[in-house]
Length: 549
Image 1 (spheres, rainbow, N blue to C red):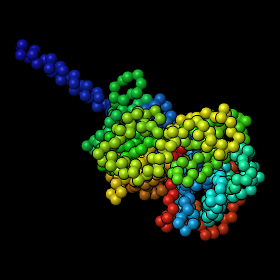
Image 2 (image 1 turned 180 degrees about the horizontal axis):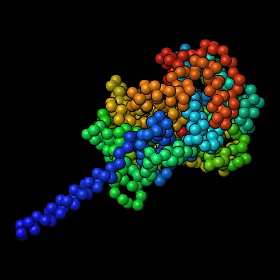
Image 3 (image 1 turned 135 degrees about the vertical axis):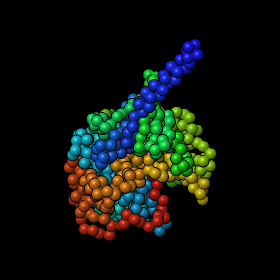
Image 4 (image 1 turned 90 degrees about the vertical axis):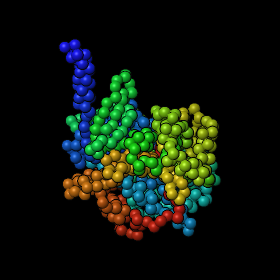
């Protein structure tokens, strides 16, 4: 009897352990889709997948106490609806003096998909009040000096071959330019040679508001679960090919929880690389990253803001990288019109604005350290530019502003630190490493986990970026008649190039402008014309992306 008594505590302990393990197992939620990060990319994918597969269960994990509080926040980016109407870095000059517009066509085509996607979401009630997230804002290129004026005229003429850029106007007439942007002309040297292009089809987009409305809709669906103030701290592959993701509360204590997901999307901005590395997929080993921040001069003075209605892009100074292109932007934030000027590059080892100073170190390993060193050596002009930007004084930034707004007064402006962007560094067998400007989808071979790295053009092309992701990781689903029909219902131009059809371009401009309450498109020449193919020959000039700020 005493022998049995000796074993009783052990048996009780074992039983308790088994009960605890059973309870823990029961707590592990299972979902079809896990979205890591509560920004524009994750929420866009969530909307796509919910419409394509409404019965799929979904969870979103965000480490902050609300969605859209990092790079997607309206104050942390320039809000440009990137469509290459004004951004000169998308149209490099080739060695023979002609302008390569193939990248500009690619960017504009992508933005047309975004317009169609947003218009569709308005019609089905996912998005409310288009003016809350998108507003017509003319896009301009503004240059001075003989060489830059010659370049801009050639650019304008080259773009007229594409229906995507028709309706754009070019002028060297100071009075005409003054009508477009009076603040940029008042007080300017009358002998300065100027040129500008102006397009009424430009937009200012509040990606934070888009994200909040997307997530609000998803939260109204029973299959969706949102976990705020929760940080992912572990990703492991299960025996059945799914992923076990552990996450812990960032506020108020509490224990870690697990979720098992058939598919994981890491749309966590600057944290995406680290989490992809944490997953252990070999595809992530090819990547390193370098953080670049941005700041803007901001004025909220209504007397100034009411007199500038444009996003006016300049040209990078000689010797500066294309990402240094400054712009004077009309923004609609918090329900009021403001003006931002910049960006000015900043440096921090953080990968997120609310990240850790150890982010850069934590992402560096034996696989990517050499590519990072090689890029530092090969892109020395970029390193010099960043050093110069970090050393700028308030007077330096004010002097840069006065090149665009000659009568600007220092007391009307304040400096605002915007978001962090993580530039991709990819291992290259020949060079060791290359700087990849743009966005890149990194996924496992079986497509069960994927992440988005990079920045420009970023948020404004989130819908087509997510189409690309779905075509990669849900290839079989995308090929089905059901998905094909739905994709074309959401994006009528899906699978085609608007660049090849002026009538279709005008039709989609008109339809989406009506739904999104944008300025109606100008009447354009609908004859086919010699529109260049989107499958252009290899470039001699090098198109480059900016900081997507």
